[in-house]
Amino acid sequence: MSQVKLIVSNWKMNLNFIQTRKLINGLKKIKFNSSTTKNIICPQFLLIPLVSELIKKTNILVGAQDCHQNTAGAFTGDTSVELLKKMNCKYVIVGHSERRQYHNETDDIIKQKVDLILSFGIKPIICVGESLKDRKNKKYTKVIKEQLSNCIPFGLNNVIIAYEPIWSIGTGLVPTIEEIVEIHDLTTNFLKKSKKINQLNFLYGGSVNADNFMDIMQNTNINGALIGGSSLKINEMNKILTFC
Ligand code: 13P
Image (cartoon, rainbow, N blue to C red):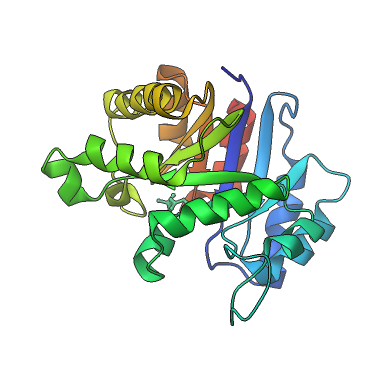
């Protein structure tokens, strides 16, 4: 199991150019161990060129929040992975529940995106997670296994999975340590058995802040976090990155 921690900021559709400069300037000042921690920033598309420029010669990496599943073509409003690569994106988040919910992304589309991203030598960060209804009905393990089964290619050397229960995103609700460990174990075992994947980077996402991050990292052996709201706050990021 990889010991490297991935701290992934999902800025979502937030920040203007001035705010971006300010936050990146703050992040640059944070001293963290870059041999064991990767600080990955995923801004909205129009901020990527600026972020990519600002992080040159730093230990910060840039990623994207999505891309199209085709290389190029008549896909109005979409963004190609080829241009993301040109902008130095090393990671792309795929299958976020907000994409599934507001853009009707299916597991099939997500799998196509994953394949394309990998073919460009970029690392996909593949999101899975159940709704509150699935959790209450005790269908969550079935739902997550289905997502893993449908979205992940067979036989990869390693894979990054972000477990983001939909009910925890932006709500302040965080699963218990036992609940996170259960999904981590389920994912590890499922990928080993069904996909012959032995190297997993497992991230947790959903209402992560510095306090619950420390608790989760101390009491599980997961590999990091996918952070929304707190990733916009320099004090939270300072605590998170220096704790790693
Ligand atoms: P919050 O951290 O704001 O709950 O968002 C989580 C998320 O969706 C990250 O991708």
